[in-house]
Length: 279
Length: 267
View 1 (cartoon, rainbow over the protein chains, first blue to last red):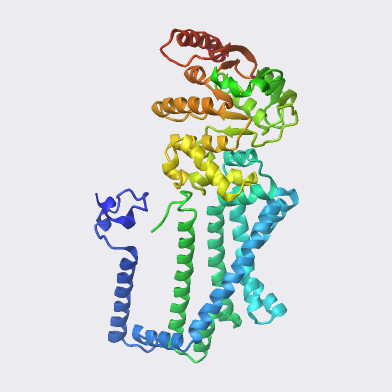
View 2 (cartoon, each protein chain N blue to C red):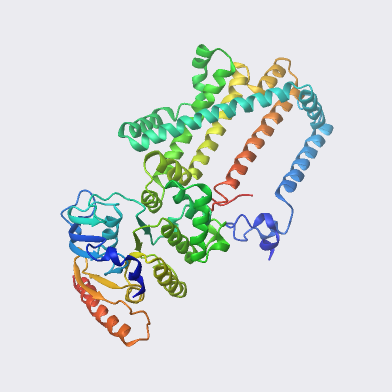
């Protein structure tokens, strides 16, 4: 009964009523999260009020710094710029990944190349490339785009390639039966069939790309290192509220991108029944 | 019978499909251990030919060779005058698996998209797809995605997709084997009706005597692997399960098949 009535829970079929107590709270997920967040903020404020705030500013101070930075345009501009850099890097990375995977699927040398890259480069964090990139491109946004490309390409290619290998053989026979060959077969059958894997790959790529970009801003002061640039400046002047506001901006951007991924999945693989939707 | 009237002229001289001493080794390395050994039969335009045999006897392998998915290692598969067969929509295949539809396309798109691949315009393909969806009574499900359909509806979509290609022959690989008995019976009736209307030539792989009798004009009975033709039985006009002819033909087929299955056990 409960699972029928609580609409947001019907999307998650696997917990099989284990948490029936929790299900009795019939509130939308976003509202529950907001309430939890408010409670945590309240605890924070209480701590600051009663214990003191020498090194830890209260949430109100941080909110002040956040709104100041945001309305002043500096924090907002930095955040959007970082996200833009990341989007460009991911786009280029995804395209290279598709080319690499096609090459790997069709030629022996391509398959060897992908295997070799996986073997050697997968354990090298993209941030380790940054000194080299700074040497070539200076501390310009180009360095960030390139470093994002580097961190996105390999996870996407590996996932996509695994996805292509797991495409069910019947659907490939259907494609052949329709007379599809080569690129037509790839774009009309294989790519959509491997899309759930491809999206997972992009997601993994985004996560490491985002970490790399933040680290680049923090450690190397690379221009366009977004909200970190803001925190970096603030760090120089030891402004705790600004530092925390910068962190919040990073979290906010992360939530935004994650929501975009969910939206993308809901419009594609979830709608097609190729992946179970999540709350 | 009705199903011959449209293609009388084509029927007169050459069969649409002929298999001559076809031999297929399974797997690329083990050609010495064939799945199909010396199979010969013919299919004439407008005919419904059933390939009946014990499971694992190489029936599906034969069908794959006709579809052009695999090349025979010996003998000749000749279809509409061609011998070098590549896969193509003139031999539309309906598979057993229920995941033969494109999950990312709606029912309508699953039927219409192949037509666009063949060079039809968007509107024309949708119109034609709509017509075949109506024929398979799927018009209400046209904008559903495959995962929202029942097994029977999925197979009907696959049949609609195959028919919309205007193939010269419909190749069916145990398409109803995984459906429940009730749905299967209904689809048998629907398929017979559709084939009657479209004068479609059908080559149908099955393990079920009942299915072979209800749907077929002729039944090619295959020996257990490696497949060889054991006998060809004419069952045209035998569709009513209660009729005496049906019972007789059924007994005949069962006897032919039983030898093969018992033989397989004693091995």
